[in-house]
Image (tube, rainbow, N blue to C red; front, side, top):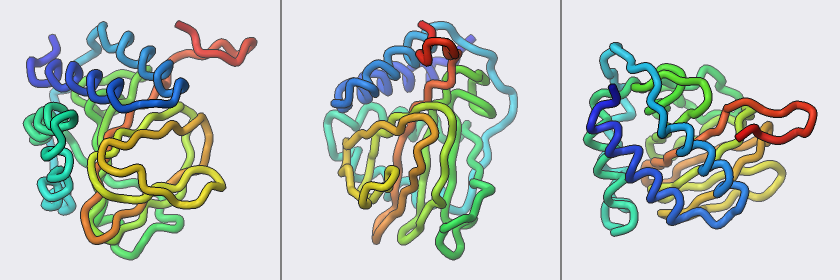
Length: 205
């Protein structure tokens, strides 16, 4: 059974993502993601664990807590956070010095998440101030919901700052990265990793 705290987060995350996205590719991806989440997955029994960067979490959440449209999802995430397992990326290409101590990712649902599943990856990234995440790619498409100041790189485009409440879509395999400035960077991400119709090149419903 899905816990009340996890279900609450998924409910308010759905509202927050859909309220802020303006790219139709994100809208379609999120529709698939939250439709799939109507069916709960297996619950983990692994306890939560934190990293040093988690000391920046409350500061990273300040801007979103001050925004009425983001406060419910941010508060729900902070309540859920003690149960989450934080980890660092193994790739250090183009990362800033001290990256391992100044960064953390956590799955809420997905591989190693509170709810273990392969079709949906929903989680968060946290960067301490003045930290650059390495350039990376992944097969699943992805939508970000940004909860703090910070800059992002997408393909060959210049670095840009979505702003608090900003969203953007990463197509499968696109190179991307992020970096914080004087404030921590906190962002939620939602990836659709469900089955594809290889012949048509489209996602299955």
